[in-house]
Length: 140
Image (cartoon, rainbow, N blue to C red; front, side, top):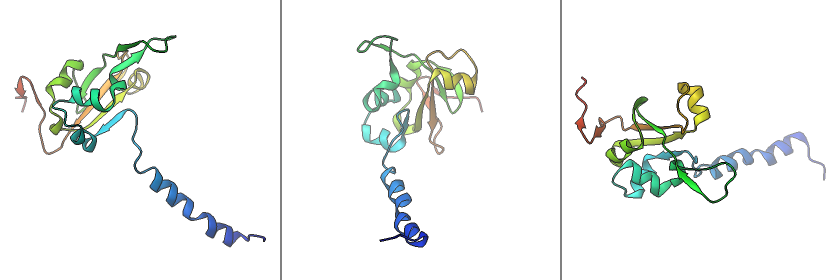
């Protein structure tokens, strides 16, 4: 049976839809979203990352297969650098909309050099102001 071009297009047209539906549930390895955070039941951003994607906080030395070491990325909340990983322990998960880990190479491209362990970008919920251990910021 010979397929004409219209028949071939008719047969293949559902494939993009099937591919799009199949990838809808996929997640990015360096991103944690608000629904994932709420399902984790963690109290702060650090514990949530440890629970959901622990590989965002550890790295392997070159040449080793098993030995992991702690990664110390710089933390940026709403694109403002605020400190190291300890800041994540002060951010409640209910105030976080998205967490993204940017590796050192991409961090150098986006923010300049000096981020050897990368950058942890925290995007807060638009309806809430982030609070740290010291309390809400008073720079208004």
